Image (cartoon, rainbow, N blue to C red; front, side):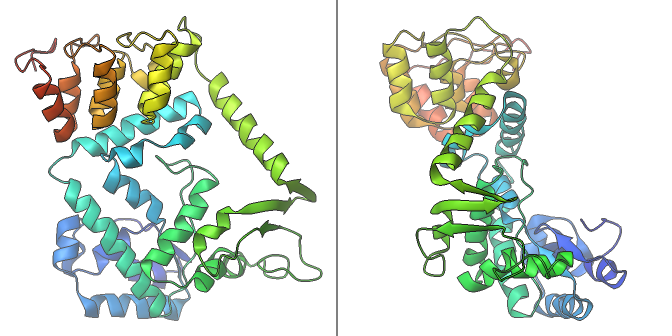
Length: 361
């Protein structure tokens, strides 16, 4: 990461071998290096950027944009982004941290569009950097909010294609170029006799579609051949570890199933849990995800702007005006993060507009 006190060019000239994340370069491609997203886009200078890219090429400084992290900033308030079934692999503490961090970005209603614009601006600049000859590498900041370890690598490959790199160039950035950067080309980076057998076998050609990197048939890693069946078993183990990570509580499994279904937007699973005995209005007291004040299913759905889930829960008798321990009703949660569709639906369904929280909000 480039220190804020120096420019990207100064860092490159000083010997920094790689620039991480699509933040510093967009800021430095505008006069004055102001770390303000709207300004970076509005005042973008083609000549400043060309000079910056030229210096990175000259110094052989690599660029690792990690667009998946900027994507989280941009879409933290989008239920289609937040309702991710892969949360089942994330341990309790980490999942709670992710939820709260994403909620923080979602609350910034006025700046939300600037995050989206900045994310897309970063994609454009990565494509321009590559065309200028800057060596791009694939990185993800795995374990950052909504950056799922393992899965995120494949997502970043797609991000780089969206930025304008060819599928071949993206695959090289993840293999050959990475080995060059690490000074390990003799052993890694390509499949050749005498090199370390560290590779995957795919069912479909990623040169035709970069998303085909997810069609994994088997993996050879650390001297072991892992079949698809073995890989699926590892995923099942990861899911079990995540389930086991929750602190002990007295909630029945079917009740937990309801809350978890609401958090990831699985409407049918939520309805099934209710039909199997889950109480639609019960307060989730698992502090790791619900926080110290707890949340009900309708609170979760409202804060994630999930209108389909809200309608489903209301059809099962959910109380619009129940609050958590701090006095937050579903409408409070929707208003807090600017979930306008959820708020409109709740109000139309009879939510009380004048109800105050315990802090008088």
